Image (cartoon, rainbow, N blue to C red):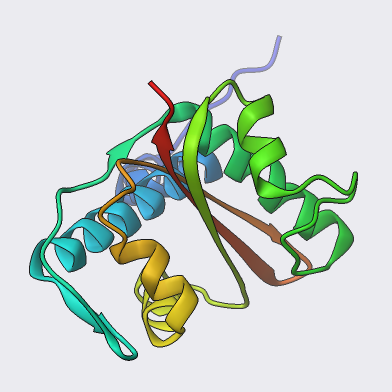
Length: 166
C-alpha cells in the first residue's frame, strides 16, 4: 500500500486558493443576476426618462422563480441556437413561455441581449434602448426573473417582467 504524503508547501498552496474558484457557475450566475435586479430596482427607485417619456420612481420588482424559469429556458435556447430573438426555437413567444412556467400574467415584458459580460453593461444597453428602458421602468410590472447563458464565448441575457393576473 502506497502512502501519499503532502508536503507543507502543497498544503499551504491548497489553503491559499480563493474559495470562489470552487463556486459553481450556477452560483456565480446567481450572484450576477441578483446584482442585475438590485441595479434595476435602484434605477426604478430614482425614476428616469426613456427617450421622451418620463417615469417617476416606482416600487421595486420582486424575484419570481417562475419568471426566472421562463428566462432560463429562453436564454439557454438562444445560446444553443446562437441567435438573439424573442421567438423561441419552438416558435414560442414570451407570453407562452411565461404561461408554461406557471405564471399567470396580466402583463409581461421581455428584454434580451447578447455579448455583454457584466450586469452593468447589459443594464446600460437596455436603458439606452427606448423599449427596453420602458419595460424596466414600467410601474405596472411587479415581478421579475432573469437568466444568462453562455456558449462559444457569448453571453445571452434574458429579463422577464410580469404583473400577475390575480
